[in-house]
Image (cartoon, rainbow, N blue to C red):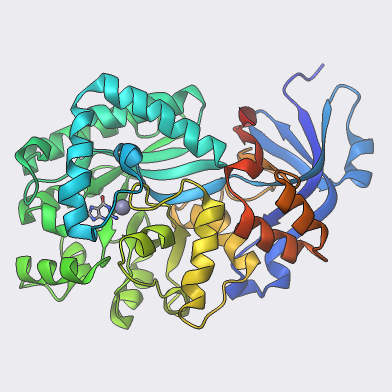
Length: 434
Ligand code: GUN
Ligand code: ZN
């Protein structure tokens, strides 16, 4: 008897590619009565229930979810573990927000017991919101990354994280040096990168808090370790951008600072990019670098409106970021709700199938993981969600009025949050149930 093979019956929906490339209709697959077959942590088959069920042996258990939609797990391409305790901090824009709220909160991660406690809450929160893969900022303390990876390892999650490198323009209690930042990052890479489904991201906080020596060290880490990521912030706030110009007068703008130190590439992810110019978008695309679009954060800190159509025109890879704690929700559905409004304020539309793409396959591609997660296709890792279409009275009533899956999806993204995530599966195992 085959004990690891299981089948799940519900409606199935996943993205096949970017609607900007394929057109809306060819960008997704929807099966109203479908079956997903999972074996050894991977998707073995998917298709119409009427076709697939008769092919399954009697030894394959089938779990049937009524009024439910199975989708791939969500991908969050930018979030901060040590800001979990300070979401929704009042009144400031980026630079004052960092000094007033963020740095004191991150300071607590010098204590491993504190880091363990918050990491457990953080991972539980990701899973209850249906996020199965995230690119995560730790604090400057290596303990923060150990705590996070230990928590992720318990659920065999596909996660990417790194310790912050920050050797100037921050309180003494929160800085490393070019040398210690290099050594600590290197030790973490050796301990964690490629262990199970965990991967490491070299994480200079942003250009203003790293000296040229530290940015050089970050470039060295990338050059010395194949497959590690680069994760930082870029062009989020006007004051920040002016500051970068003053600190790096030799460079031709913010992106060029990172470019100068060899930090652009296929595994580089830059959060925000709210105030980029056309040339910078072209350079991001040319180097295969990705942007994390963080609408709740950009609105909350008053940073500005991300120009998704411009990124799309240049073929820049884009994923969604919650950017907790500047972002105000762990929910990718709620992040899409705000993303739609950010587009509305610019006279543009965000189609629900583009949103689905950004939340799943597009995010996975931004993290160079598009061949492993983000789709419900055979061979993909079995990270998927069961969404409850009757999660709340209003949702249930509103969805009953929808005429097709596009409308249903859009309403789910407008009204939905952690309450609609009935089950979260990672590598074929149930890791959250409501
Ligand atoms: N820029 C540098 N650090 C941060 C941070 O922690 N959050 C956000 N949103 N922007 C940053
Ligand atoms: Zn951030």
